[in-house]
Every structure is written in structure tokens, then in C-alpha cells.
Image 1 (tube, rainbow, N blue to C red):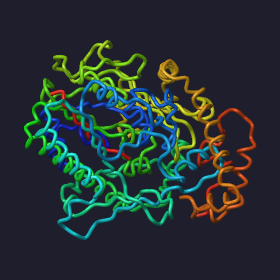
Image 2 (image 1 turned 90 degrees about the vertical axis):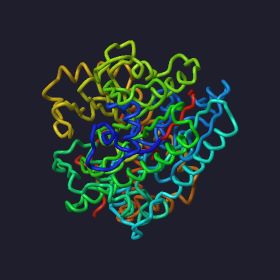
Image 3 (image 1 turned 90 degrees about the horizontal axis):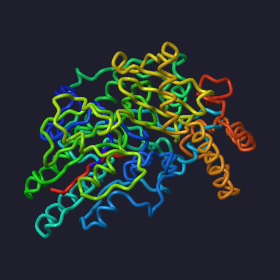
Image 4 (image 1 turned 135 degrees about the vertical axis):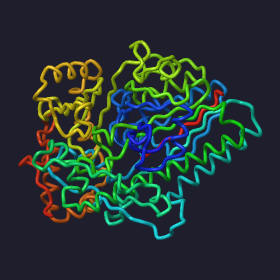
Length: 525
């Protein structure tokens, strides 16, 4: 099962913040990975990595519009060829061509030196019906289909199967105020789920002053409509309602576990729960994802199944590309060469009393994540090695890097890159050994410009009307000619490098005024 949730919610042995009984059941009867990361903190590229086993730059999965080709062979295709029954329900979102026009235009034009709000102001909203449980109707409908399929499969077939269920929860809901190409910034729940959240335990995140923010963070905060004032109550409500949405996700997990129990499959089926990315929920003055901070990049990963030690906690650093070889090994199918991931089964099956399982041959203790989409005006690369998190941007020169010691700075507020140049040098060298990120950033830069130019030509005479009515229409309407001119200058600029307009504090950027069965449950965005 794939959903969309902050992985930190699942790693504590006890979590007084929100009641998640079904995920706790998975932890008690299976294993939890304490340091699991997305390979790209946005929907489609993250899932492309999960389905292909390859880092996003290897499949050129640059944004929510540009991911895998429709006929790209996934791990589920390979197990189906070997005789497994396979089924998918719910959100998949790993192929090219999806998501809104606004989303792709925002990604293409992120190098243009303007600053426009692209999302609705984040807000919390409560449904009046105190007993309503099925808030995200589409997810519950797909869960019903999955449980019915399980019942039929158990009754009519002895063949091994793989079942995938993709959820929208706990993704924020659409904000209609943003127009027909609206974004999603409403955290919606009901009293039934909200009562499962302990308000007194909801932490209010610390924020850096706007002028002290990293330039890419400022850009992200501005485009996500988060630079204005928020009351403590607003922030607390947004976070509490998000946790309530996680509780609803847990409720759907319970439906799957009950169906497995009722059909007698629970003890012979591998059950895996993860997410394509997390949710910042107002940490670092942002909501949504598109960031390398823990709230966005750290994902849940729980696995229960035959021969997996109950209550096992694995601290090794892993990522979503590891699911490809893991699924194939569960199925007894050979893993293709030259993939980015490593099977997690050796970490699960090895006998160890320690959270961190030694042995580089089992799994390298690092993770790579990258981001090239909207709401961030520079390609971003994160390398997590041991307790260090290194974040590089663009060409490595035009935007300063970040370095965080996660043992001493869990909130990631103290960038110590200037204090530890030797660590920065070592991490940057390691990063370059994995990906030529400067070259990748240049490729993405050219892809964005060419894609936008092709789209502009296809729209023809209707271009001015279309571009002025995307999600940024509220800001665009204040200075439409200036923004069109900025785009034209960007298109005519022949420089083959990365835009030097790398942050909201830059004077070049002008804001608008104002048994062998396996079920995978994936929280998506």
C-alpha cells in the first residue's frame, strides 16, 4: 500500500500524537525502517523510481509531467511474466503525461526571474458530520475494490499474487480559490478522525526569519503562499488536521489487514506500507513536499511477512529504489543488472540485536534524493550518509549548499556547511560519484526551456489568455506584461547554464505585489 505520509510518524516506539493502531500492528508483527527516503520528494518522479528501481536522472523523470514511458517495464510486469496474478487499484501516477497544465508550466518556468504564488494559502477545514469516516471517498472506494479482490482471490485461486493499492491520503484537498487549475492546500478531516489526535502534543515548528532562509527555501515558501503571517492556532490546526488525515489513512490500512485475516491470508502474505514523499505541514514555513527537509523526504517503510522478525527496527539508510529488487526477490525473480536499488530482504533476515546492521555488502548506508519540479527554482540533490545530510543545488556554484548534522539538529535549522568544509568536500565528492549533478542540472534547464517553447507554440494566439489563468493568476493579473516580458527574455537567453536567479531575496526576482503473496500500500500525492 502506497500513501503519502511523514515517515517520522512511524518510527517512534510509542506515538502519543496520533492513534495509528493498524500501522502499529505492522510494526509489532513486522519490521520498520527508521531511515527510509524518497528518491524525489514529489509524486510522479518518486513513484517512477519505485517502479523502475532507477534514480530519477537515469529515467529523466524531471517533474510530474515527465516520468516513465507508458510501456516501461516495472517490477510488477516482471513478476506477472513469471506467473503471478497481479492487480493495481488507486493512484499509480508514474507515467509521463499527467497532472495539470499549471503544474508543468510552473516547473518549466522556474528559471524565469519572477516570484508568483502558485498554491492556495494552506488552511484547515473540518466537516460538520461528527460520525463521517469516509472523507477521501476515492481512496475508500479503491480500498473496497481491493478487499473484494482479496476475497475472490482467496476463494478462487491458489496462485501467488501481488496487489497494489495507491492512496491520495493524506494529500491536502483542492483549493478552488486558485481557479480551474487549482492546487491543493486544504487539510480536510472530520471530528471522528480529529479525536484521534492529541492537540497538546502537536508541536509548533520553529521558523527562521524570512531573510535568514536559504534562497531556494524562500522561493518555495513564497510560491507555496506561506510568507504571510500565520497565527499559532492556524499552524496548530493545519498540523493536527494533517495528523487526522494520517489516521484516516491508517483506517484504510485496517480494512486491508481485516480482509487478509478474514480470508486466512494474513500469515502467508507480505504486506508493505510506504509513501512517495512526506508532508512539511508548516515546518520551515512550508507545506506540501518538494523539499529535502525530513518532513518532506523521510518516508514510512514497514514490511510484515513470513520469516520477518516481529518488532524489528532497522536504522540503515534506504530509499524507494530498493523496493524494485525487494519485490523481485520476494517473488523469486532475478533482478536485472544496472539498477539503483538494493534488496531489503538481507537486512530483514539477518540476525542482529542492533538497529544498524553492519555490512556494506548487504546495503550501502546512504540515500540519494533529487528534485527538478515546481515550487523550487533550482535542481536540488540530497545525499544522506550516516548522520549527515548534504544538499547541493543547480551547478554547485551559483547556489550555496546546506549541511545538517541530524543527531544535533533534528529540526534542520542550523546549516553548518561553512563550519565543516571537509565534510562538505567529502559529501560533494560522494554525490558526484553517484550522479554528475552539474550536468543533470544543465540537461533539466534545457529541457524546461524547450518544453515551454514547444507548449507556447502549440497554444498559438491563445497563449496570453492561457498563461494568465494558471494557478498563479491572482498574482499574474497585477503585472501581466512584466511577467510575459520576463519569460520572453528567458527564452531568448542562449546561455547554456543555470539561471543566476536563485532565490526570493535576489534583486532580479520581483514578486507580485501583494506466501509469496505481497500487498503494497502506497500513500501518494
